[in-house]
Image 1 (cartoon, helix red, strand yellow):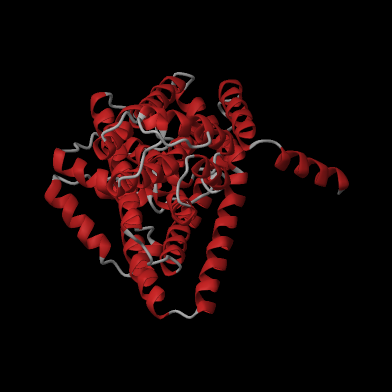
Image 2: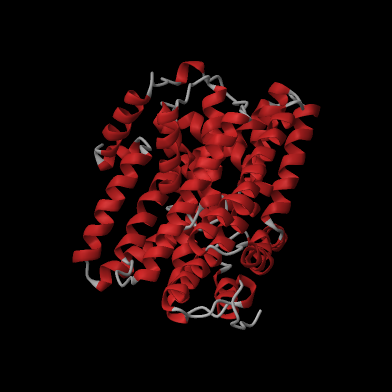
Length: 422
């Protein structure tokens, strides 16, 4: 028993990234060496099944808990911060859709997919599916993993509880949210075994050429994230401040993004961001609220992941995505990303919601999630770095805009004369 405990402790003490990489290598090696050992695929099937089971509950509980405990005391600065959070996240989705249209990617599914999809004929059908999924019975939505219906009912119940719930009820929802998040962490902790099974299935069925597809998909994800953080976000900041945004951006990347890349958690990076806001001379009453809020709703990296993976699934299944449907996908990616879990791989859990717009079955969507975990060794770190550094970037942008309206001097790195401790 002591030996088993030692093995478990060693496993838990090892970085998840290292474990996933090991799972990738073992799965690929077994796929080449013993392609006939089909029993190994059960690990991938069980992992995908566990994700399918926990994801609907995760979305439902987290959104309700977040809304019923949210603060309503927002001044003009907070309003601008929220607008920037949502705008940045939406533009992330736009970047991903445009990038995916220019450089279309495909995914190799472990199971045949042709008979499992019912692609919509155009935007009218996509919009009809959207509306009907929104008003689905909440129990049916949870049972059938209708993420649009889950999100809609979670928002309604969360707002209702915010008005009428007692403090004890809010505490219960917070505890329930923590418990569900812990359950997800347990599932994610076993991801290396699931990834091993998925990689074995894909390599044994398709050969090592499958790495070419995953590498291309990962390059698209990285490219979209770099374009968003280095071009899109600074452009929006310039429109707001009319100042060179790159000195501020570089400070955020240096002191926030680097740490977030390794922690892979926006929540874990909150203390780092609070300290950076203090160095930037921001109002403590503002950033102590906006930074935790940003860790929840400022998710442009997550929006990119959701949109790129959904577009890849559509290209694989030969589903035509017209301009109107692309707009809906960008908005939905932004809205769903704002509800992404704070655990590693949280944005991947919301891919089925976007896939459902195009008639892609939940079984296939969860296979897309599995592929997301394979590329997530790098993707999730970059996504978190983009998300978390953006919390400070947009908070500072809103604060400095208020300074300009009030006639206050901006920091020296934005062309003003005010000294701030960096």
